[in-house]
Length: 184
Image 1 (tube, rainbow, N blue to C red):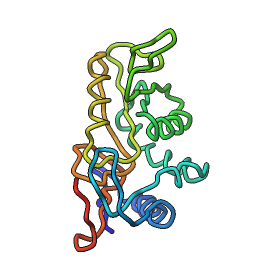
Image 2: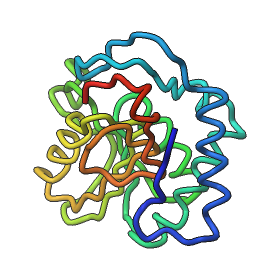
Image 3: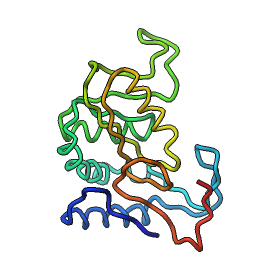
Image 4: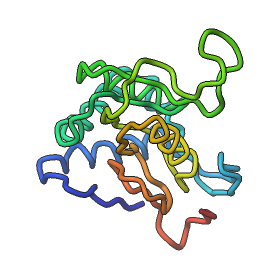
């Protein structure tokens, strides 16, 4: 397994990034044959809920976004359905910045039926859109496009980028070339 430091990171964050890689390896990585959300097959799977279900781990991951929040200075934190919402909730709570949710499909009921975005926003606001794990980035980029259609300024960030997605992340995660059979 290997990882790269994210762009603009500080050397002081290296121990925290190493901790994140280790906790992924210890608690969330499973080997086998898996069908991924984007329809591709992989011989490894990262179960983010094995991380996010532990409040101490979730808080520590949320704290890793503090320098990013400071640099971007967003008006809103956004999360993609479902894992991104958990992450955005934690980061929003720690940073005291309001959050919104971006759905995969519009809700078919209620006062705001047929809308993809839940929560208050205003045109021109800066949004930090958080995702848990990306492989090809298709879904999170679609979420970013939905926010941009609402005239919001979007920066996308993920905890883990396991593919070639054009998304900044805390960890670029890959297994050694000889052992990985990932089609992404």
